[in-house]
Structure formats: structure tokens, C-alpha cells
Image (cartoon, rainbow, N blue to C red):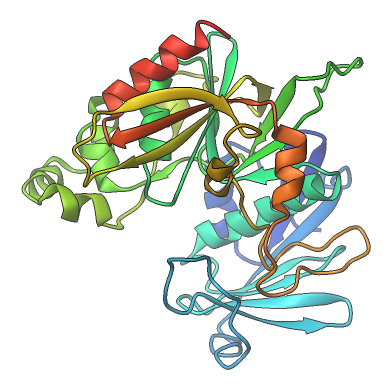
Length: 353
């Protein structure tokens, strides 16, 4: 039996096996793991197979509908009796999503991030089957207070989170957050909320890096000077993502898997307005129009406890979010995009919670 990786996530362990030692080495470094033969304690095992046999297999499958505002083909899919195949247009990667033996096939060494996403999809699915809600949000803990930051794609969630982490204790999640109105304590307390992160390092764009002194080591100095010469608009829309290992950049033990959730921050601002940056305390019951910033579809990889996959173009149930999170304190930040003012508004607000 060959060695693999055992990823011991909160309440759910995942084994990772592969025919590529190179991939396992990279994933071991990413998750800070050691290779092992002891994989039997895992709730599920993910296989990752390096092969070029299926690079074009899904080009003519039906497209999985993209979220509003996003264009171009990204994923196709086809359902089988006991699972679903998902094909990635840009990379030729194929994923077999199955309750017992999920597998990734294709140029896995070239695209380890897609394998990481696939592995973590199993963790996400496990929680969604138990009734947790999926939020399109970053999460961190400051002075013992849990903060989630939601907003549309490109709205600055990660950038604000990293600014706040300078005063924060723990990084919880970068872009996906699991939320429940129950606590993990033996005696649940009404009105208290809990969040768990998807254990993935922040993948950030150059616009976030070049203006943050702590992050500048992630980009060579020459490239940073080139980026600073770009207009603010071009820099903001440049897709050139790098991984930011917060445990190395901030402090050892910075990453934490879960925390109580005390405040939801919704970024409802704009780069084109002249209105001043403002913060308003509300909640989702009072301001349901803010809900779309938080809601996130589980996507093509999710199947419920009966093995029923999410149908194409299925929208998340907004009522479930509103019912369960109605009284979660929410700080809406509107007006002109200004990260320093937003940071100060959040820090001021958590002092009163």
C-alpha cells in the first residue's frame, strides 16, 4: 500500500491518494502534513490520478450555468447513475463526484489548486448535508469576536480581511464560510452563531498585494514596480492570483478552523461614487436586500443525503438564510471604496458587541 495524506479537518477527516508523488508532496506542503500509511480513520478518500487520457472528454457536455455577471465557459457536467462527472474547460481536468469514491483525473500536477478545491468540496458537502449555510464571505477573529465579510466578487472581501488581520487574532476563511445559528457548545444559546472556514490559503490578486507592506514579499520587486505603474482600474481587475500563507505572513497559529460569529460585514460600496464611505448597523431581517452578497450556491459538486445532485441553475434558498440568520448583526459599508475607513468602522463596531 502506498503512502497518502490524511487531512484531519474539524469533525471530518479526508484521505488523499494519488499516483503522483509530486502532487502529494505539494499538497503535503500546502496543508502542512506528512505522508502516511495510516489512512483508515478518514471519513472519505479522494483519489487524484495524473493522466492525459481525458483532456477533451467533456468539451461537448452541457454547460453548468455560471453566476450572474460572469461570462465564458467554465465547467460542463454529465450525470451517471451513482455520481456526476464535472469537466473543467480551461484545464481539461475531470472530476468524478461520488459519495464513496470521489476521483480527480487529468493534469493534476500542473493544476494542484483544482485538486485542493475538489478535496475541500467534500468537507463543504459534509457540512451542507447537516444544515450549515454556505456564505460567500471571508472570516476572521478579532479580540475574541468573529467577523464575516461578504460582498460581490471583486468587492474587496480578502483585502479588507487582510487589513483587519493586522489587529486580528485568527484567520478563519478567505472566500467560503460555513455558518450555523447553533453554537458548538453542549447547551446551544439562541441568538448565537458559529462559523467554520474552508481551510484554503487566501488567493489574492496583485492589487491586494502591492499596497500591503506585509504581503509585498509575495511578488518580486521588479514586478511590483510594473504593477504600481498601472491605473487603479487595471490593477483592480488584473487576475494574477498568488497564495498568501497567513501562518507565515502574520504569526504561527494564525489559522483557526472555527469561531463564534458576532458580526457580518457587507461591502455595498463602489469605486465610481463620490459619496463618503459610511457604516450602518442593521441585520438581515431589517435589510434583506443585503442577502445576495452572502448567498452562495453549493455548485455542481454537491449532492444531498439521498445522493440527489443539485440541478443546473438551481438558486440557493434565500428563505433558509433569512430564517436562520435574521438577527445576526450586520454592518453595511456603502459609499466610496476605502479600506482604511472600513477597517476602522469594523474595529469600532466590534467593541460594542
